[in-house]
Image: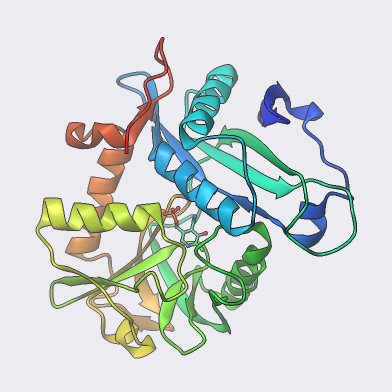
Length: 312
Ligand code: PMP
């Protein structure tokens, strides 16, 4: 359990960070959030926060979509986060959860004319899916649409869509769900972006197919191009392309990089993790832990005298 939280513009003991049952965000899901990971590097005795500024830039974009005007820059939120983790003193892998929410204690669904608050907490956190290779099932639930509940924003209330898909998948014996758009193209997992490999090309749905614009997705694309010289395509994917793919993966801050080895009871390729997914996975874990020096700029060290923030 964390000891502290950032709440109402200051770092307070976690037990003092409480909201009312009347809070707008609690009743109507009018909030947005982020999930950020920090990785412990035991050799350097350093905790590296991965892509810290990028997460707060997306957080502020989500807040804009929700008609919020938060009094923080991404840089400031990054500094507060580093300070919070230092107070906790974590020396292990950590998950950071910032949330912005409509805080007024009023009845009435709307976005305008409400007070917004930001809260942040951080806690030790290991794996999200308890496996390195997942059996995914195509969900009977469809992905929310940009013109109903925009997937581009990480909106708290929108995660009921993810919850429906995830629970259906798990109750049906799968590890994860793959969710299709309203017009039947592959969108993403319940809380992960998806990639497939076909004939040596890495393919992922475009950002217009109602995906969250994933930070790990962007990292996969950069590492594939830069380190593996792989061609990458962002284009719509049909459901049955999943069945004939050579390899597939799910990626996201929480799940990290997981091979999808079966989809709807069909083996993907050999039914085991393939060479491209394995290479991307290995690269990713080196990068996030600050072991790939070339990408150290993506990692913000927590335990330094003067805050030195990674620049995007
Ligand atoms: N899609 C959804 C719906 C998610 O919740 C997440 C996790 N934030 C992702 C994709 C992956 O995004 P990221 O790589 O930025 O964590």
